Length: 153
Image (cartoon, rainbow, N blue to C red; front, side, top):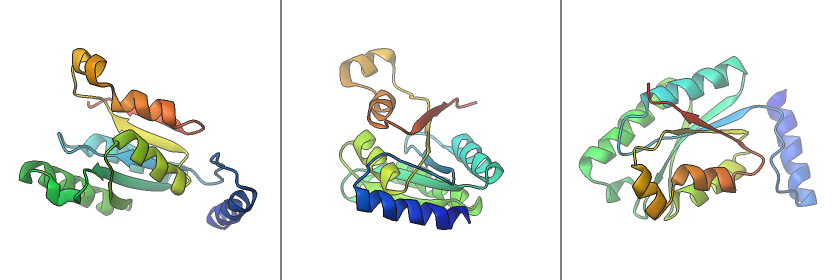
């Protein structure tokens, strides 16, 4: 029933050109990393989706060229994470984009996501100050979508 109501809402939003997310069913998007395993964040996102009878999407934002553009070790980490996500009944997708935050939030809006789960950054504070933070950029761009930062323990 919630899925049918979501479809009707999506059609109405499209007709009326409404950009803000309106969800009847919780839709959780988990973003995985290629630099370390995302096991905990995947398990938390899928567990919450089950509890609220929602949907869970697990995505990786790859550079242009997709997974093949990654070094073998990073590609293996992403593939293992996606395999776990599928085993936990999440929909998985690798999306390509130069700007991770922009690509992630655009995908979240397309999927009518109500919550985004991100893992804590492994970058030092200095690197974040000099080059910016994906997490902060997602929070800024994701107006109307809850953003959760999940501890890695």
